[in-house]
Length: 477
Image 1 (spheres, rainbow, N blue to C red):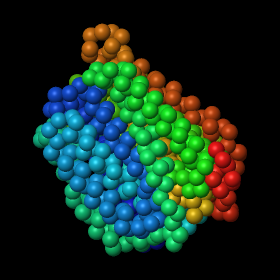
Image 2 (image 1 turned 90 degrees about the vertical axis):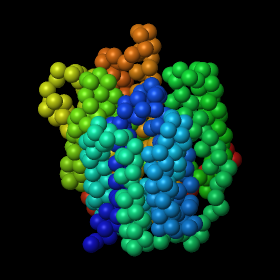
Image 3 (image 1 turned 120 degrees about the vertical axis):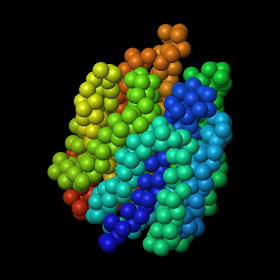
Image 4 (image 1 turned 180 degrees about the vertical axis):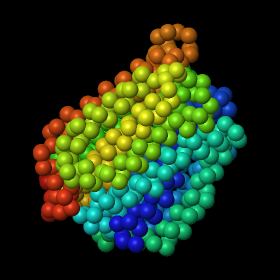
């Protein structure tokens, strides 16, 4: 099998495991909350803690892959993620569950970015769009299978068994990686930016986790704001540090590349809206509509089915219309399909609801594929590890922020009413808020030149240029 198919399919085993895990958990949140005797909104910590762990540890993934070899790091990541899954299935309380999700995140932080790095370094650039599409085909099976499978297990068995599904998948991934993935490493690896790792990790953790603590009745609001303040100050120190360092762990100089800036910063706003959906939809269907986890999963899987359908048409759509036009027009369409969730009602025909989710999944996936490919259009091979780390951090932070925003809106709405329950109208407000955030990303895509990523879209490659890190340009910060 050609490299642009074989390597992505193998890497997709890991992505399949991660996506299956996250979608299964989203479907089972109400049941997990009931079993652990917690408020369903409090289970946002189970989602945000995992995403936060990804964001904190992803920056080191590129360096470790360069230093110790991509195959070695990839295999270790699969082992850590699988072990975390086993422990999650054995958790007895929310603190334990959150801690084991953080362990899973440590594995996922190395697993997916390093796998993507292997693809970017082994597949020719003219085949990159096709390779990324092949990568996501098996990976999208996780979101397709996850909701109905997780709902079935949760409804008729026990939610804990859903975590044990990762054990055979992890074993298969370990074997395939050992046999087929090359152990790529860089000959000259710069020193590890430990100070930058600590500052960026503390900053991201403070901002994301502090924001997630807002609305937690067990924590005083002053504590949540204090955590956010610590995160903001730490990120400020990191920005200063990155400008003075030759090889910072998160290279801010990459943002000077217009395609990377739009594909990372612009797409982050869009992902805030998308990140809220796996949290909102199962709660709406189970708490608002009164459906079982299995019935809920059978409905929400339509989004992933639509996304999978898109993967076969992404390359010709981008080739025909170009990145800028696709990103601008599709952003508005995809945000509208997020907002349409505000109209969902229990008496709505299920076929109409499933159709809306199916189409929404199609357009959201087109936006993801377009931004992911555009982000690396002008990145040379020697900067790929830094670029993938940066892009992955931005993705996880924005998705976790989406969960936190949706949970905060629900909590504020029920607090405003004062009855302590989550009403159907609360979900409508949450859908509209996150859709409004998502559509704001269109302003970043409008700034792109009309021919942005044209060589990549047409299958031709031009010499890529990337500005040197700020420290190499003599910046004193």
